[in-house]
Every structure is written in structure tokens, then in C-alpha cells.
Image (cartoon, rainbow, N blue to C red; front, side, top):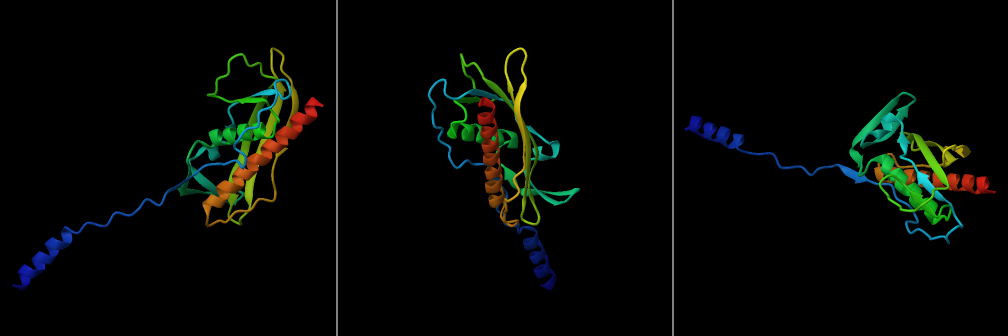
Length: 199
């Protein structure tokens, strides 16, 4: 009798399946505070060709990055970008430049425009785009604005590194928000350089 009872318990135990656990992964995107472009009258603002945003190779990963030292980074596997980061940065730059009236048109890869003569070409290279374990934010981007045509030349350039951004290391949504602020600040830096170049 005892053997039969033990056998039944063993059989019952083999048929108990673990409960399915919810996927803890969260996805984030960059945002812009002013996503509605303000149209400028024709001829008042330049048309810009935004080349594909270049990222340092380690930033191209899907997980968000937290830096723990000069040579140590952590990939947060459960906090991921919902779109390729270079596309998100390009999208926010375009929206911000248009919203500020710094450009009458900003055409990026994948956006077609017929009969548009570009006044400038914008190149952006992002060298850092991450949180730091101490709650600071590390963002750095170098950019160049050049003329178009057969003999292009650089008219202005910059190296943008905001120093006052903070995030909550236990809340990746705050990191996405602060990196959004960093890209918006980059757009402000580019707009100022463009205005100075145009005199």
C-alpha cells in the first residue's frame, strides 16, 4: 500500500508543469518634446541632407548600456531599444531641427524628396550613449555641416557633451528620457552652429 502511494506521488510530481512567467523585457524609444514641425516659408530656412547616423560599434547592441568604469560596461538584457538606436537618433534630430525652424527640410535615409536641392549635408557620429552606474549620463556626439555639390567643404562642426543629465539606475525609462534630452541638446547645438555659419 505504501509503495503504491509513493508511486502515485512520484507520478503526480512528474506531471506538474511550472507556471509560465511573464516576459520581463521592456522596450524603449527616444522621444522629442516637440514632435510637430513648424513649417518655414520657402527660402527662409535651408534644406539639409542628414546622412545615416554613425554609432560607435559597442552602442549598436539592442540592450541599453550602463557603464561601470572606464573599461567595464553592462548590457541590460531586459531593457532594450525598440528601434535601431541610430534610426531613433536620426528621427529625433530631424524632428527637433524642423521644430526649431533651423531647417526648412531635413531629409534622412528612407525619406524621398523630389526636386529638393540640399543646401547642407549633416554628418553625425555618436561616440557614447549610455547611463553610468552612479546616476550620470554619458553622451557624446561629433558633427559636421558641409556644403553640397562637386566641391563640398565643411562650414561648421561641433563636439557635443552634456554634463548635467541624471537618471535613476533602477529605472531604465529615465535613461531613455535623459538620452532623448541629450539628442535634443545636440539638435540645439547644430542649430546654433548653422545659424552662425549663415551669418
